[in-house]
Image (cartoon, rainbow, N blue to C red):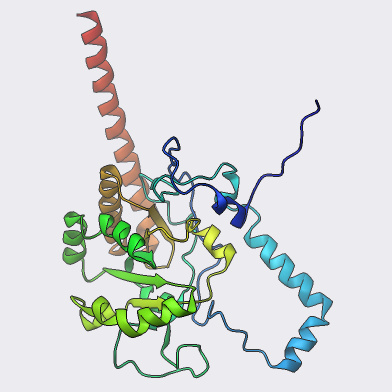
Length: 319
């Protein structure tokens, strides 16, 4: 019989696969993930603030429809995860972390999330933001510093994130040693209205425990604004899992991990954070030359080590 054409699944369809396939091995990230444009305050609030006249005019404006379609097409022209037609999860794991940082000039951006923080006495700013004027932008909290970003929204996701952070004492040591250039940022994302309000009313107190006031200002409770395009761009294909990102001071994703951390992934994360802290202290105009030399040195060391291993193997075979 002639072959039957089956279109490659994409977007939400990929997330209908089994969440726990023992025979599936997630692949390492091989190229940068993220959004093509830098984040800006006020983006992704998740509310339509247009008046009814503006909505009516936009609805009848064919040029605006074409402009919006072109913008979306540009964003999803070559999404990383849409190439993975056989998407499956093993214990919630979507991908294995990248061993080395993505180069800054090729890295893509972490999108802006908009939500309220854990700060109790935060000033009410923008009315009508969906958070009683308490909404804040993650991009403003992250600008100018290297950020270890954790993204979750349920108990299972939080346990997974903990395998990267709480169960990784070397990471905490690097953060403490480089507090002038590095920080942690927490994002708890819950789309369900009822669950979000329960968390907001009863869970926020527990989340504040052990966090300084400054850390509470970097802990965001978000319930809207994350589109399917954004989810796919940053690898959030399993909505129930936990994710971690190393984001540089220009809000570019330089490294990412999903679900429970493997020992080797923890090592890569710590090594990447050290490298980003080092990079943050180098003047921007000198970074490219400096890190090209560093990478060449690392590559030379790797070649020497591989040569020693090959020689040892050959000698053992001769013996």
